[in-house]
Image (cartoon, rainbow, N blue to C red; front, side, top):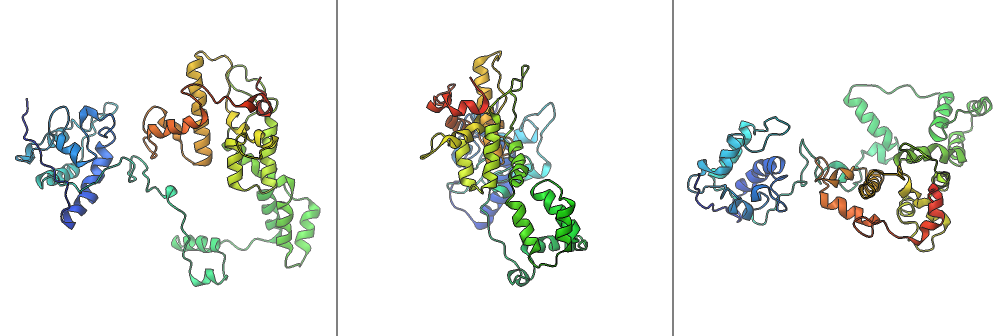
Length: 382
């Protein structure tokens, strides 16, 4: 049985060097190695390592910092002997010697903690999980370009390409011929090759605005929406059958497909594009097309004979959370259904906050008056 003196962890302001040491050396170790299990909510062994009070209080085994004999601190004993972090899948996760040395130095110096500092599992990106400082979560900032770009001598995209080519000591490919250009733009914009006549007209003209006219013509084609809607339909798991053993047909799924195609062809603003799919039955001045857009919410697999109906309701809920987060946020929130996300900054609480937008209760979907009308018909649901 070990007996430790009560720790006196400083939570006051201290020297710049000490503050820098804590933020650059100590905090990253605690966040990466310890905070996942030792947060204020459901702290393992009652030990909280996110704030000064938690470190001072210790856990179920008593204080973890011995102020009179720092080298005998329980925290150091556990990390030195490899008890903490615990084994994972039968493999030891003992801290490297250099990280143990950092903790020894910190504890020997009084385990000083910046006033008001609260560690957060997702505050910084590490090699094991993404944090809120991850590049894709940062506000978009306007790039600074050299004078050659701002004066219009080269296109900004060409500047970025040229910069990378220069870094890798590569040279640009020769300028494309008109025949190559028309084949590329047809494939990219409408997904179909040009006819012989279309190629001949473009390659034989000397008109300086022939390229602009060709691009405008293709963007105005209905084939543009058909080509690019396919990408979105893949993102939202569009299918015309229900999956599972019977894989029955969804006879009205084409209505949602055509709505997406129409949105592309008519340059529907992206914010409106999102709103109609998530809440088309709730917006003011909505119409039948707004209801059809909510077919997004019912495109997943449907099992009309689940083994456990109650469990299946939560599987449907997971489908909604996953599809919405991956399509509109580019993040896999569904992993947080059972635990805090191990890689993205998504705690389990956020999963259920998001899930609650689709459900009026813990297991019951919203009782929308429109579900007996066009929205049901979108997917052929009885």
